[in-house]
Length: 262
Picture: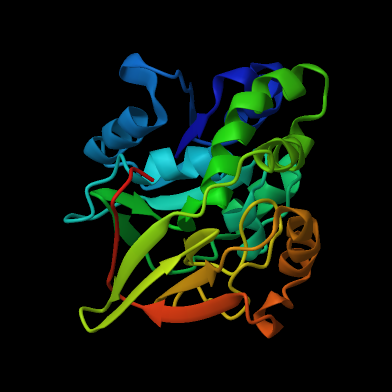
């Protein structure tokens, strides 16, 4: 078993060492660049015929790990120890956030088969999006190191959301769904998900399932800046599907085009 974890978590490495004494786990801490990125470590693990690779981190760490695998040949089983800002994919699977509890899930040996998406040559298991939510995500990752320093990293998305409301763009996009249906419209965002949640608990595609062979798309039409907090509450609760500002589609192939970079 290979455990791949983010560098900042060295403070809790004693937990790993205790676990390592009673197992055959090898522990590797990631670095932003070089040979010890999560992607490269996952590639090395597969080349060394690792049976299980555990990602210790958040949705971003998991994304980096799966992009190290060659899915044209047998891949290791992926385990997750949640330690990120959102941990949405792990929570969708019902994996508890505590280290010991998550390790018990891995030791239990239950395997769940899930769909995987490909976007612009990269794999993803949870979400890919354009528009306001993508801007919030970008800002959240910039803020997170500073918020972590004062113990408030879990508020990264909220802080980023408030900052992103100052100047909202509504890009016009062309969406071609499964090669047949074409939509051209301005959007606040267009979010593709494999699971029903993202952004630390927003139920963006309430009916999405991880293993149904489909990806789900939520399109938000342009909304006034002052109404965004109201819609965010509705998305958090998962009842935004009742609003005419949102539309939902299910697909296996999607092309998103725009005149300006997204």
